[in-house]
Image (cartoon, rainbow, N blue to C red; front, side):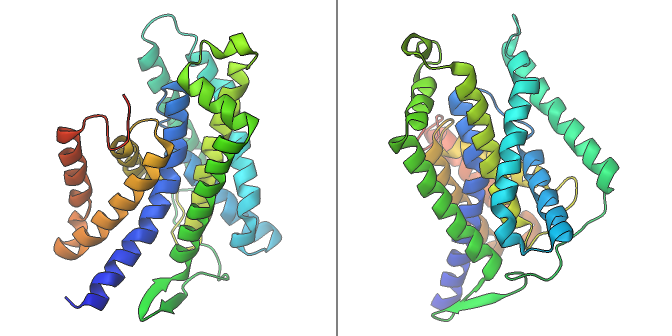
Length: 292
């Protein structure tokens, strides 16, 4: 293997890892905020991909420029999911954890079933667009433009998330609620409002990932499942509730997947991801940056 090929593999893994991180960060944010694992996370991404597809057909604008609209739509979806399902599940008097799991899992089943009913299980893809099917050469390293754009968008999203958390009143309220959801009411913070906005933000982030993935991936009702599975691994690897642990773990998973695809048959490339996760869990059960 030449150095150029090795760098090519690492670059591809880095870009894919940034997308994995963007998918996982919303999941980590919600868990850190409420100790709830959203099993409908992959379906939120699928909705974002269909929203991008539908918007392109309806108003004929390049999907790259439609991403803000998709993000706004998914924010509404996430907030509605909390207000319509999750907040009622959290009122359970017994077996609260199981109730939350079944509530979000049931939500995922409903969303996927409705998508199959409305759109059929057929695979769809976007019409020719600004980035689709194109590559760029950087010093002899060839990178697909959709993945490059997705990586840059992920970096921008994490930068914006850091600024939101550290520089705004909502970010401070979010962090306070993450630390002690019961005590924040004493200082005038509406816990339910923070939860609603947190679910909206988490869905908006995975919606952004879905909008970017729609440019270069087939769209079908089950498309979110494999990405969601990797997102759960990323969250656990980075540390449950650690937002920026998701970034580091996502990049690490992307790199390991890219190297595994070269060493192992392509059908077994996921083995490297799960081997990495098991190795970390044995040494550090809380994940790389977790505090649990």
